Length: 41
Image (tube, rainbow, N blue to C red; front, side, top):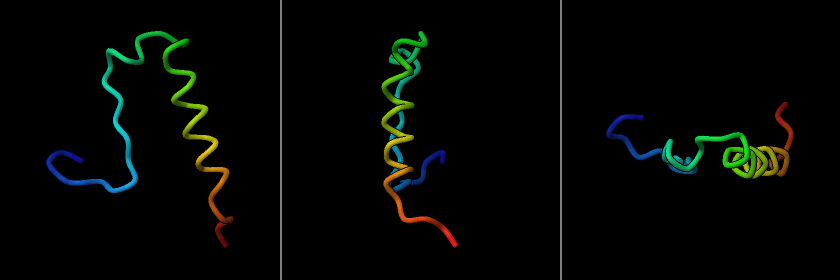
């Protein structure tokens, strides 16, 4: 990922996820998005 645009990716700075409490909303958001995608064959 270094130096390349990764469309559809979101990077959260380490300072924003130092605790489980800070990390949890980002994980939930990612899981919700993944579940919204069509099933793979």
